[in-house]
Image 1 (spheres, rainbow, N blue to C red):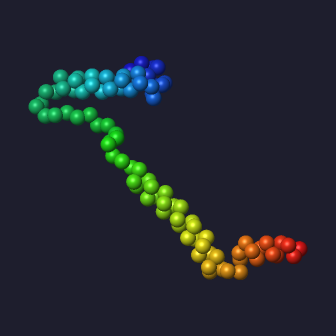
Image 2 (cartoon, rainbow, N blue to C red):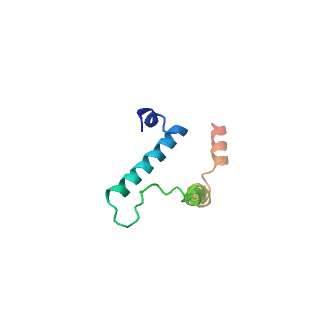
Image 3 (cartoon, helix red, strand yellow):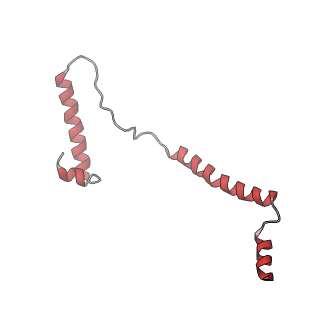
Length: 91
């Protein structure tokens, strides 16, 4: 890969250069040690879908603060926005 491919890693040419580099490395590994076993390059598991887990974590992190605020109003009813507003108007 050229330096320009490293600088602009999101371009189509850089993606093609990465594929070409992986292919060349794979072919070089096959020529170096022909053992009769298959050789696979390790890569990121792009087929894995993390969106489901992310949505669950997002929902939990959104709901827990809401429940905490609502429970605080139930447990401490004298501290509420209406009583604070009335107290502020009396001054």
